[in-house]
Length: 444
Image (cartoon, rainbow, N blue to C red; front, side, top):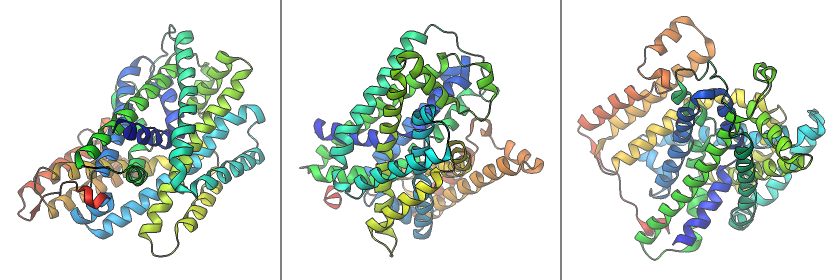
């Protein structure tokens, strides 16, 4: 039981921990300054807690999230939302980001920021990822047992040596972005890791991996799931806090802080590696970052391609793996900051929907809820999230004022009150239904 859970947890940690997980914690450490601890707590809450809860819930749900959403909301909403989600964590944002982070942090300090260098690197990167992804049954051995321990030990080494050297430094002044709202901004920063969204997809990898082990009873399976959750949560939290602490204590020059074109997380990782390990630091950083991002790329290609192969009538797994790998390659060549800038509005829209979806599914396992009420709740959250994203993009005074009237908007939780109102309606309406308990025979 423990071995099964540990191996599965190691695999999931390997494919979860990628580009955003590397660069966002040290960037948060730099920006949060003296408010680091509430900021990193918010970051871990959304980046670890929500992601692991989403993952574990998906592995003990009959038919996965697609079936649950179809039963509780509607089949068209389930398919539409999941298609958008899988495209977001796949070829449009997360997959290209893994390649751009690998290049920006690991290779560009050596070869420069040449578009030709990015083109050649991303071509080799995606070809290698594709060759592993077209054999999805082998990723437990290639990713879980080999590549994950390698990159985790390298990151841990950087964090420990960095804490020993820079831990006595004073934290910088808190930036305007975090001043007075460090916890809420930390939650929003945790969104950018994509992990809660990716957890919906990686449920497929988790369940397919667990099926290979075989289970004699429901109790054994559920106990193994708890081990998976503990392994991934502890690994994430240690590295997040360590990387954030490194960013918080590492001395960043004022001109770098003032330059919006410099990614602060990438800067901390690269400069800390050079200062701590000397001339070897360039090679150390390149290997660490590339391995970390590469495992995520493989996992994303596998998960997204499996979903589309099962849900869309045209095309098989090989077709979708080829198409999504190529699209990821094309978008990666736009550069890191461009990919991150484009992704933030979509993440801000999708994340609250995932949070409320998980809350409804979890609550409905014990409390009967009206289907109309559940649909109303998810509809309200979708509407509020869309309005918040629209207000952040168009900067229209009336729309901005409307959004600011939402309770808890300042801590990135403007969707909370509509959710509570929708759940009250779901408790009061008569057409109630209760979620089914996990059935191991259906899993097998």
